[in-house]
Image (cartoon, rainbow, N blue to C red; front, top):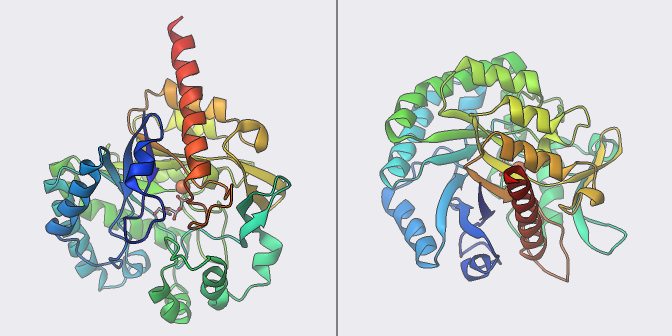
Length: 356
Ligand SMILES: O=C(O)[C@@H](O)[C@@H](O)[C@H](O)[C@H](O)CO
Ligand SMILES: [Fe+2]
């Protein structure tokens, strides 16, 4: 396991590489070219510059999160061919720069969804939270405005404003796309990119849907054990793998996460580890990483990662906002640093007791 932190680049992030370097045990960052749009080709020069900046700060570029997938690929439009060709070119440029891990998601229209980006918890910290009853009252077309108004001026990953203009049109375009069609479109995409992934040893790591159930009537296909296994089986090569996100899977109390980690052994290339607290069906808050602060058993989760011989990067996923920090919701420095050191403490204990 390599401990890493997500970083949005010096133009967009309040957290610096120098600060990340000082988190004990944190060896790399997971990053992206935040200014690129889904469907655009990433130039080799831009990738190299990003890598050099990170390495100059004494850290590794441990993977990309995300190279986003254009909606035409998810919908399965004829125009997907060009966007797939562009994606392949981006993968080639990443491969040539020695980058071998790419996280992405296959959620229609919206990336992760929350009803509140700064819900106050009893200790005064604020967290991202989800309440299905509140979401049901929101007009999906207004969702971008809601998120934007609550984001404290930061551009949220997956909620880039240029998508706002197309929201109604996007909903129209997804009308004929049910879960089966979405799955077939994912398989089509994966089959098309696999030769390039094999050539450069690139591990594609699909992120789980968040929350793990259908939102605004849009289909979900990466949300529970059987669905995820079906994706792995459809393209049964190592390069078709997972970003195992405990917070996304953990939004549903029905997901047995340690069991899923064990059964997906060999196909988990990246881990997002965070805790959530279940409040009622369809209602949860993000919590501190500590097991006792939420509903997930982080010891069992880290133990499962240890048992499968996880060698890829793990990052503390979203953190709470604490100590007056002003940062992108979920992505402040302080609580993610606490999370990283806590997870490394669990790992050290598991590792040492396994050797006794
Ligand atoms: O990790 C998470 O839960 C989120 O921050 C997502 O935005 C995630 O980065 C994407 O779904 C991956 O493509
Ligand atoms: Fe995640």
